[in-house]
Length: 417
Image (cartoon, rainbow, N blue to C red; front, side, top):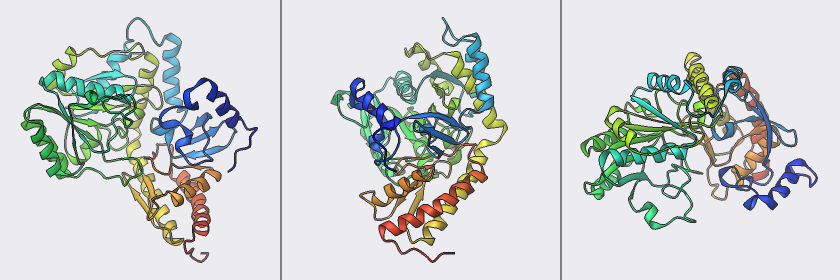
């Protein structure tokens, strides 16, 4: 799908170069994707998005995770519109702050309280700060390669970062109990927190769910050290379990960070915690001019309520199972070695012997040209709007995609069925 020099996306990129460093920043920069992906989008509806040139896609990135019920969900939009008519950012929070906190505490088993902010980095940073305030200690254990945000203590980039910013982080390997125990020992009585992801979702690598043994041992080690177990549920919260992702392994954290899907695309994040860290949460100073805005909280209440009442987690799981099975059958049919991993609601698709991403990039570009938006290396997302008919529509397209890729990369395609 070649972009014409006079198309809107190209013109916007050219204009951006003059007024935005690099033309774009962060994870949404289209230059991080194979040539041919659009940079700019104009609207979304259900599970579909439209780029600036008017092309429509079945979207399996879901705005990088925040969309969970469907773009422009009518119930969420009605709730947001009602609050917008009365006010958004005021001198203090609207009553919706209390309503939302009560709903979160009622929904999340480990939560005795909740605080709100605007993005995942806010939430993970607050968790770490609360843990240090509550324990009076400094060391925080983080998994090798894990992503917890985009400020110096946790950014994947070292540009502008000093050694002092990360002086009290200790690295362990996810799902490796011996490595975790060694990291706890290295903390030498100065352990504030063990920080874990909902599951291992390193960019461009196989995704792995936590084992029950690892999760249980992390809980034991944190408790024995009187430290906080923190679950970073920013990416996965409300997609795997309404009570938090580690409910699936039977372990409750002391603190957890939430964002992305909490308000179906509006800017909101949350920290939930137990009573062990309630006092510490009152001692730290964390705030933002827009953190108690009413519209996003109205959207969040509508989102969480609808997710719960419609059993949306199960809808996403069933659709995810069908998509995974269908893609695997097609890969086998055309002789391509597909590697699918992660929860079915949050899949990553890689290919064997594809270190240069030649196959994966080609697959995603062929899908993009036919109206399906996949990502070649990042966690993808299903929403409640990805119903079984949408999955079947997708699979009709991906059968053509596999055929085209097999022909271009030299895989032995099966005979036409």
